[in-house]
Image (cartoon, rainbow, N blue to C red; front, side, top):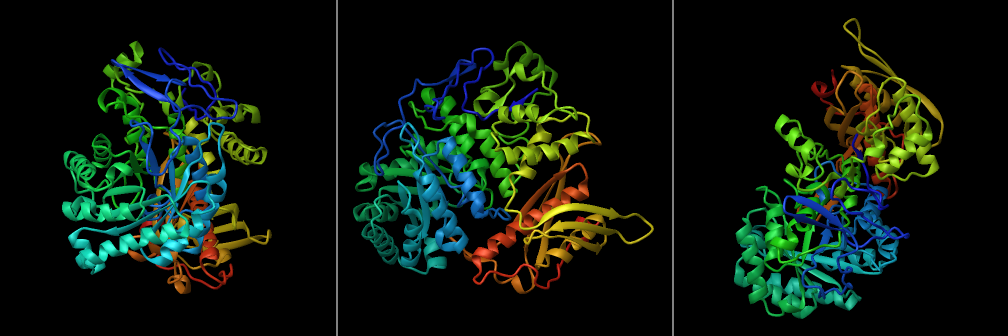
Length: 620
């Protein structure tokens, strides 16, 4: 059986796979995944060490910095709001993955965003590993002085702080959005960089928003001016995903050639995926001379998303040596799958099954011809191994079958193999859910265990906890639900609700206890595995309603003030229970965010009504 393995412990690969090694401290050299003919070999401890971090230069000309913006641009996906705790957890996982720069957020957006960035800077940004690696912690800012001051205040606690400031440079943005002339845009950009320098920030990234549709000569001019002002990284965004790979690669090359001072800074790419070309454009940019690529886990982000970190990293790992003049990164690919799973669980953004690298079907083979080839040689249809990204098909694990007779040690062993080293209390919580499921389901699969993990551990702080749920429904009466929940005061209470269906009744019973205005925007349910005993996973998206509807507002980097939405996930073999868990998770996230964002914090327990719930979505 396959199971996920994200441990940096030494692990055996089948066939020609070499050992992936780590030091006792848990830090291992960047892993090189090299293609040899049709076979794939993972080598460790042969690549040069990660170059010493210097903001405006990289001593190794082939090294490409990976700038992860999952916590900033990725969080701008509808319904993907993350709490401060969730952002900190993801930042720690990104550090395990080995990203060079973590864009932790947009500090001026809200008090919660500021606190999240600051806590990441203080904790993750000062956790120096044995080889000297510590990620740069970056905060995004417009060129407004108050934005810049807020961003610097949030990141300055990190060992390597950076501020990323931007202003639009395309004619359409300057005319309709900014209502500024070219000279005014240049002045604003230069003033921002100079102010950051005055505040003590020596690692400054500047982005000309919508560079892909900007006039080339104007780009060269404004970029040259911000370099003179003190910028150390120039990020070139294809904001609307308009460019084709040959265009974007040529743009990067032309900027390097024609911009005064470009030899003394790092050029970066930031590609959106509106035409499905974000990864291709990012790689074309790197081949054109960019030495930083901005991307997100699972490719999440605005509209169609961003360049996918896992796709960019594995493309360079597999083809960089032979087809990209030796390009490499410092990413530890063995952590890719666990990071993808964590981001999916926290953000509520489900990974499509056929997603490259981390999708459920990425290493699945159903065709008889493909299966025959795989049985004879894996290299016939796999250009990389699942082990290289944190999935394992180790033969020694095939004998462990989880079921109702399995103990805590067996579950813990399987979890460790899947990359989860849990604290005793966390293991107890997962084990309780595992035993409850095992009593009703004959065989527990790895997917079941992962769903339980996400539903138990990848959840916001439990302000309200669902203890019990009972629903009566059918054709002879109104669906009625009774719930028992434990509130923030630790007291268990019982609520009752009547609805158009069992899920609606359960939600109204929850509403009667939580009493915080919320509007359901989206509801979806899917099965984890096949069969009547399969676990159900449910995702909901809600937003504040009633008196709170105008208070869940934060600043968006490009759009100004936007309304926040909050997602929640739940898993259970009973669809109604899974739905209730998801709703409580979303409510906890919303209450937690608003308690920080609104001063004074809203009192849990105010009178409210849940509005505009779609009976078509939850009535069945």
